[in-house]
Length: 621
Image (tube, rainbow, N blue to C red):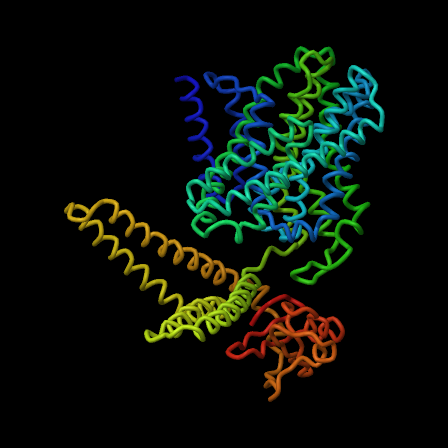
């Protein structure tokens, strides 16, 4: 009962603090750490010591899998160079750098333990990077790099820690270190790939959403345990399995299975992520208490903790700026076409929050190790310091650097364009089906009408103005009121007992699905309306001054005709009338024309589209 009560109390605390943090727009991870530290000193609160097995076997696999399965493999591959530089190169750089700093402050600590300290504090946390980065609206490329780094750097750090711990009792050569890393990384990739193949085969046979979701709950633990059993990296195995399964989910899984799995993993990750930060704070009391038993003075330990924290922050910034060309300069952003400025580099360098893996790794050091208490308190100081120091100031830094957040208008335009292209492919397939089948009930026209309504709603988001209700807004409002009336009537019938409860539940679920779609669309429109009132969008002089040119009678991309390539959609420059293909086309001649001429505004010349785009300010009109 005591354990059950403690677990329920932790869950209630996590949910309450998270809800309050969201209400006041404060990052929940930071608030939970502070609450955990304060609670650890409250009389009556039991001492909670994080066991490494609980973290590495119980918390880490599902958190890594949840992050990996929702990470785009395309984006991950596009940014593989900076991800590998940070997850491998920076871990090694930080390990040796922190070790050297600690040795300067406390010369009595040998190199093996100093390297263990460096390996423990080297890897930033996947949960912290995702939770805080997305919360404050960092550019997507930065979030992708931070997520990719934090998914893989645990493997590098744990290999380095394993080597350092082994060196405490024997001599370790560079060949052994390299061999351990190759075995850990290569074995993890193999196990993760094998898990992907097995689960992919099973999912081709499984259509039940409940069974499919249950399989997904087993994947991270199975991949991790099997990899560790063969002395490979369980972290890499889970990440590889998650990335691959997430990438092929639209092909392997049914739609109900994808929806059920997505909902369950979002809930599980939400609870575990926030619980982790509370548990970090709860370690404060007993960790600080053990420092009193150290042979080193309080001043020496405080100096070591401060030096390690400063080293972690500075070394990351040094590495990021020293390798800036390799990290961000190889090419423009694949979506926006912009080259990253030094501001992006600074944000990546500043977003180095540590988390629960650092503490768990510290606890894996054998208890008989001399000066182990120094390692533990340094690990806690770095975790708390980076979460509270860097995590708390990251939103302010992003604002001061004027780094743009993902623009809802850009997203609306991309969404509408993607739906348009999907609709073209769907209609082409529909025409093939209709050519071979009689259609006395005019089903083709009904399908076309529904597709057009969906696409119209997407394009209407681009034209949303304050005080003006679009057709999709009116539809959402009326249909929402209708659903509420329908639900009331169904509940009235349920109370009579005249309809089986299973049928009532099924009808209510149908209404819930439709209402949730309306709510999601309304939330997107509300965000767009809010953003549209921002001064930066209202003040684009290029859109205001662009002439209104009519498209030519014969539309074609001359450069595509010369190259022998095909375009997806056509755009026209409003300065000179040049017609080029869109960015969805292979050659992207419209964007190339802007880069060559610096003519700022183009418009769509596709039938039924009259939106314009400013290349300079990345705004639509």
